[in-house]
Length: 313
Image 1 (tube, rainbow, N blue to C red):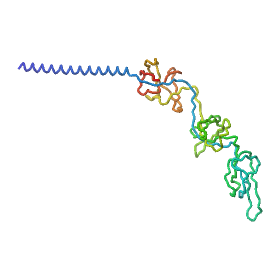
Image 2: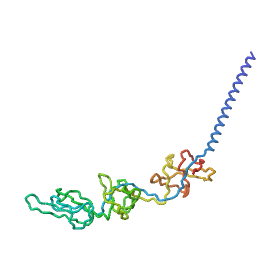
Image 3: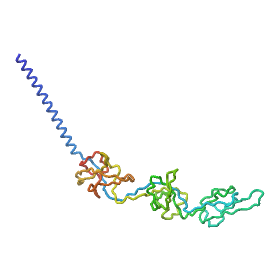
Image 4: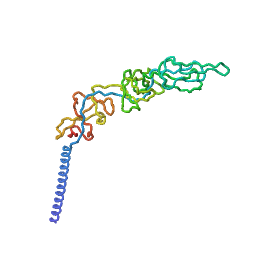
């Protein structure tokens, strides 16, 4: 009986020892894994690309379009109703003030036949002849339009949200479909004092900075209008700005090493401003960054404050 009890006790002791040994092995295994993970984390180095931080001038702009017209043009009307008997000019004709440009026959059946002269009120170029000979006209029907093609301007319309920036003297780069790749300079010379209620836009007039005989009235112009200059500011690619805990941050190289060694990064909070062409103007707290600092612009997604990095070429 005693032997049986002793055997049971021995078996229980062996089982207990086995359990303790198993727990010890698991503990050692986990400890090894933790140490390995920590060691791997310490040895993980992320390759990144950087950009030198430097101050520059950023120009806020909008892209608009407009029509090129003669700065000075005038439509010519007959003084009497009747029928256009003949036209003495053609499209593109150069005329002088007082020159006869058409005749209108105001007579009616049973009355004496007579012709009424239509003369040009200004010197310039015929830019429009909307009616053919034989067309009946009255005193409110334009027979021709005369314009001074030596002075051209661009008429454009600016959306309401940009009205606060509008003023005389704003610069613009003008592109014409007829001359791709070329840029002409222009300036805003007039800003309408009223906003069009139907379109919610404001009319602006730009004049070319220099004459160019290739530019014709009636052409369509694409204009990059510069609204405001931000001088001596830092700007970074918008894509490298990180949002974290309600704030905006970027990574800056903290301890730059040689190409054979690893550097570290520092997470720096910024105050973002205007975004212009995929770049954002930023401000720092005093001492956070300086001219010449390197900003991580690629490979920042898995970084943490103090992470080791290798700066790729």
